[in-house]
Each structure stands twice: as C-alpha cells, then as structure tokens.
Image 1: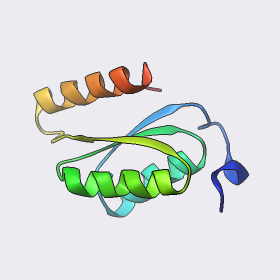
Image 2 (image 1 turned 90 degrees about the vertical axis):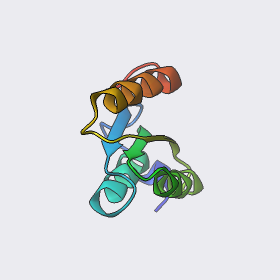
Image 3 (image 1 turned 60 degrees about the vertical axis):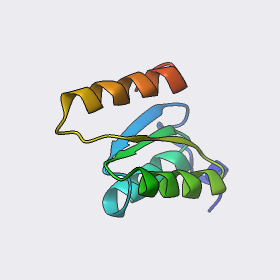
Image 4 (image 1 turned 30 degrees about the vertical axis):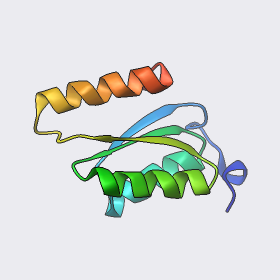
Length: 91
C-alpha cells in the first residue's frame, strides 16, 4: 500500500515513537508514517532505529532516528530537543 492511499488524522502531524527499533514500536512508527505523520524513531539501539527509518523512507515517509533510554531524564530531554529541531514541534 502506498502512503497516499491511507491518510487520516495523523497526516501532517509529528509523532514520536519510543521502542521503535523493532516489534510493536517499529510497526507503530511505520503506521504513523503510512498515515502521513513525520516520525521520530527512538530506542536504545540506534542502528535498529536507523533500520526503521530506512523502511519508512523507502515507503515514501519522513522519519529521523534518535538514541534514547527513556529511563534516563537527560536522554528524554535530548529526544524532545532533537524532535523540535528537526520538525519544529511534537504533536
């Protein structure tokens, strides 16, 4: 399914998905992108996050990756800062 075929209320939004390096998190990130959101892919394993970003981009979506351990306040703050710097907001 092409991205244009399945847009909804997520279109034009900025979504941040933690745990997006695999499994349910990866699927959620891909779903947001398929529905037209710009996606920030975050998890502790940056290389796997970048794989998720590649999958989203190959399907025509827009995404960036950011390493983040949500148990660490500094990582979460940095994640928000990266998101705002890249997309100007977080929806």
